[in-house]
Length: 119
Image (cartoon, rainbow, N blue to C red):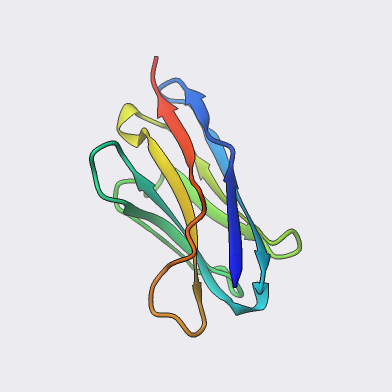
């Protein structure tokens, strides 16, 4: 099993940047991909971005393309979400998750980290 811990959230002004981290532990060898999701108040959790752990192929939601960058450090077993040009609509709890080689969807969500974009 894989455990995930997110960090890096906080309060930022519109137009600002934040970098979220997701530290993975446990059966790292089982990770096929890592993903980031966000959940705004009163809304369902939505996909933000994903990256395949081995080769680093990435995918993004249309709402964050050109603003967010997902990456991973296989030595540190950590994934990152660089968020630029933030706007108030990006305010949410951000979660990371993994997809295993045996799975068909993302799971093992972390506890989440709050991102608030406000002036």
